[in-house]
Amino acid sequence: AFFALVTSFLGVSLSVVDFLADALRVNRHGLSRLFLILLMLIPPVILSELYPGIFMEALGVAGGFGEAVMNGLLPVIFVFVGRKRFKEKFPRLSSALFLSLATLFILLIMGIEWVALAR
Image 1 (cartoon, rainbow, N blue to C red):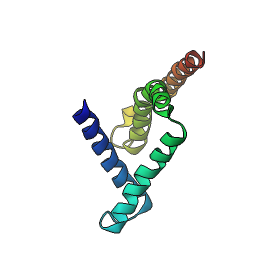
Image 2: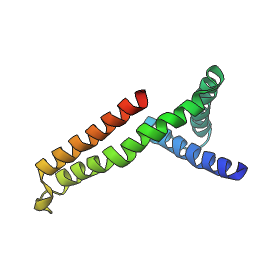
Image 3: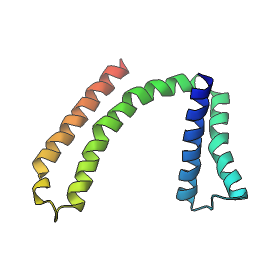
């Protein structure tokens, strides 16, 4: 269990450091890397000290809404972007009615889940 948690933490933390370097347009070497690591570590440490139960609460939220976004909205967004980008190459992919209905269906499912979680 220890190694599972450590390897997961290392993978996520390295990804966040690289994401911050890209977002802030900072070099990934030397003191700027140390700055990025501190920027990644300090806010969660402060937040977990101020509110110790936040991890379990975040797991509950990520399980419901994260799942709805990852498996509900992202595929629809991918299709939408793909249809806009490759419209000339694949003209049959540009069915606006299908995309609209799929988006409304996903939003309906998310709304039902939101109401169910609010109880």
